[in-house]
Length: 132
Image 1 (cartoon, helix red, strand yellow):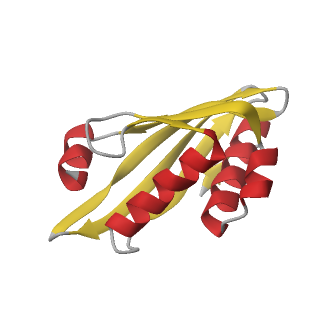
Image 2 (tube, one colour; image 1 turned 180 degrees about the horizontal axis):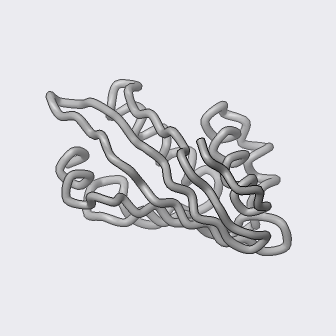
Image 3 (spheres, one colour; image 1 turned 30 degrees about the horizontal axis):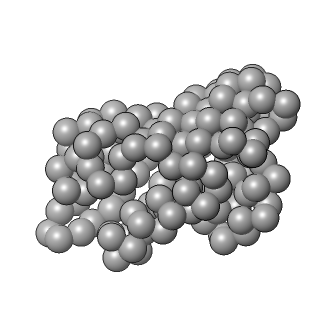
C-alpha cells in the first residue's frame, strides 16, 4: 500500500481500525463532537451518518448484509493536516452478487480530529446494484 505521511490520512486509518475493532471510545477521541460521514449513492447505506455510532452502524450493516465478506483494503492515501484522500479497494459478496471495486474516501479535519468524511464509490452504478 502506498501511503504518504499526513495527519489526516493517519487519522482516517486509525478511525477505521478503531471502529472495525469495536473500540468506539478510541474512535470518539479521533473525531469532533459534530462528526459526520456521508456515503454517496442510492443504496440503503447511502446518506449521512452522524457520530461514531453512525459510522459504526454503517460498517456493521455492510458487514452483516454481506455475511461478513465485506473487505476494505486501503491502497493509496495522501493529504496534509487538514484533509486527506484515501483510495481503497472494496470486495464483498451477497445474494449471488460480487462487489469488486474502488472507493475514494475524503477526510476533512479540524483541530487535529476528523470533522467530516465522504465515501465515493468509483463505479456508483455497480455499488448501488450490489447493495439494493
